[in-house]
Length: 107
Ligand SMILES: [Zn+2]
Image (cartoon, rainbow, N blue to C red; front, side, top):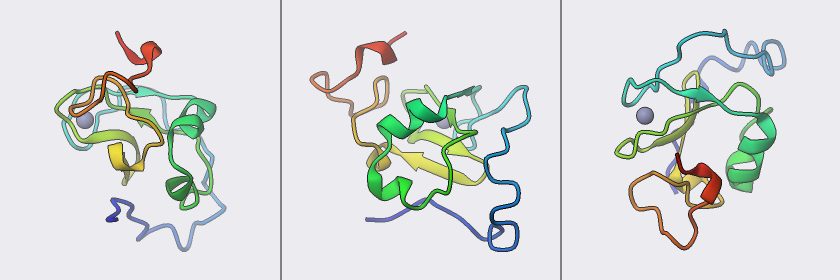
């Protein structure tokens, strides 16, 4: 399985600025440039696969992209998580199966 994780700048600041909330304000998805909204760590943690979570030191500060045609589901800085990183199929995204779409994800 391929990964979109990039950690080129994390080596020297690891444990320093992690878990610091992202600056408030407008945040754009790095893939589709649409506005994204922040998600709670517990929400993020419930949806992301264990394999992906094992690569993360914390789950705070992620944003959710709700653009159906965008492959990015969650992102934080240069870290991008796609559908393949999820435990469940996230609603709204292309390829989402109606049988597994979470009702609360619909708008
Ligand atoms: Zn997007």
